[in-house]
Image (cartoon, rainbow, N blue to C red; front, top):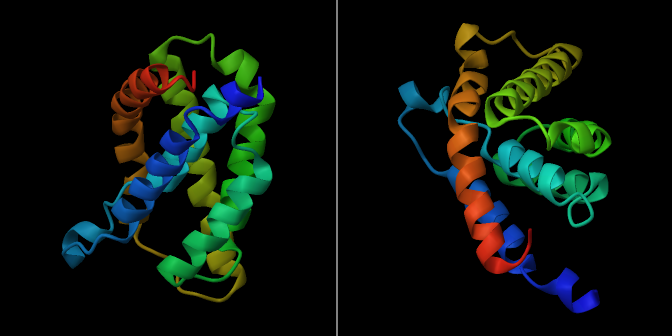
Length: 162
């Protein structure tokens, strides 16, 4: 079991690393507001498919690293990502049996909750309210989830994670 548990851990780390790179990749200012929530999507996927490998504490640490890398308020992403991880881990037995389109709707609601919590933090710290394009990454996450899920499912089976 221990060897089985270690096998494929590189895939989880690599997918999170790529999500970090896609998050900090420089983009033109007009497209920056449309950047998907890559790290949140990858954390949702791994907590849904392999909750024993990536948990709430891991999501908290990843959120701290994302706060440092992106230059946001320290703890902002930690709070949202650990809440996402908790919700997914608690609900994963029910969500895994859903068809892909229902999982996509569930992920969209989670991404909306992530943005809503971030909006609350922005308001609590006295920062100005963002425009309506603030919600666009949730719609992109909604469109990307089926593709990301199928890709990571295939890679996870090949690597022996799933």
